[in-house]
Length: 539
Image (cartoon, rainbow, N blue to C red; front, side, top):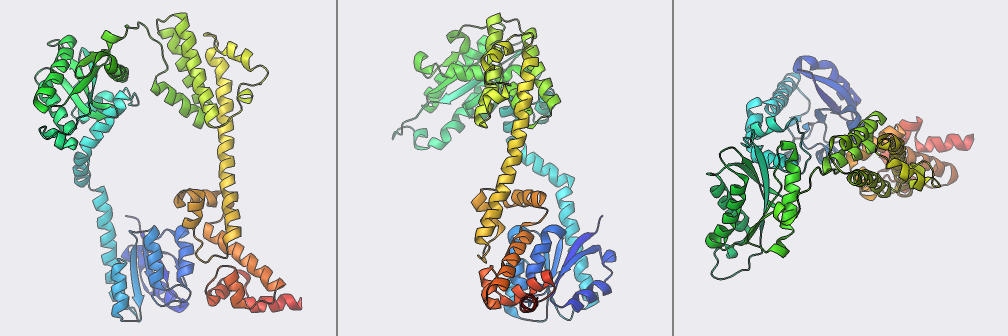
């Protein structure tokens, strides 16, 4: 196993060097990745060094150990922290316990005692990693998560976002017994509003109604066919497998009986929308959508019954349409590229016109649907349509050319590629705007001693983790280093242009502690603020 990373924090350099020198860190399972002379210094180095363990003194200038630990806990709640201190103080120990400090070690640090403590810490880290990797624990966690995973997969299946080749293995994995059927039917069950009455038992417990209806559905279907029942956004959803020994008409009739039984046994009116039959698992999403469409007719047909989509809508043969999965693939390709993928997706979508036995008018509608998908994206991201189509003047002419079946894909690919380029530029511009906004905010608020990355990110409406990554990538500096640089530049100006005292300048540039300001200034310029001013004055 690789060595764990440890960082030492103590204001006495001799103590740090002696500790690094006298311990056989590798033998104990650690490597010292860095050290710091106070809490502020440690916080600046934490993000870059990423230690697993921090060893810190309590009494230090500028920021004491307990404040440092409190700040660390906000960002790194699981980091191991060891305190070594010359103060055997119960109050310190009590605060350390509250901050979940791993060990409290008294100075002077005994090498043998420290070695034993580090061994315990290493064992604890090993156990945590082992526990997270433990197969039986993972399997138990997986088993506990199966009902949720099963529901999520079934929702993906009906929303047409599930991976078609991976459907059969997933169905087996989740124990969903609907494979190898002759046909499938999807039904969506809508529970009608139940008024509260003194008589109705379930009306007094509204939250139990969906559970009772689902149980009733499962009981009635169990002896008739193989099925899967789950909750979808549109209601209780059933995928029924039609085998040789049962019929789809029988299943539709059974849904009608379930509606009657729900009213008789539960005093709850339900309406069942039954979708088109399908012959492949990949068509289940289409059956689901048509079941939802069937439910839309309940205001006309009436509630408390099964409504079969074929009874209320004419059956369409050879229907050609851009499904949700195809639209999602096209959108993702345009947003993220590369150009090769954009071309492949558009050619695949165009190829569906050759595969479908559809009327020429359906081809025209299908092509316009794809073009409309692109136009919606242009509007969403405020892209110039004339620019995307190549020319504002030729926009209408190009639209007529695009909707020719033979040249459709090749005409549309350049448009989609220009959209991809524009979105990439906009993404880069947005990042640059965010960085400029962040720098501007820092310039205006550097004097606030409470200015932090969290404060800044609340202003920018971004997560601190993402902002830190983007800021470092764009500027080559961490947020803390940049803020320090701004503050010191302002301090330098004040030292040269005013007669303000050092403590006044410290406060004006965001440092509450004059001593810490002097420490940071000397670290940057090599001399104290007073000497710097003197040298400039003499110059």
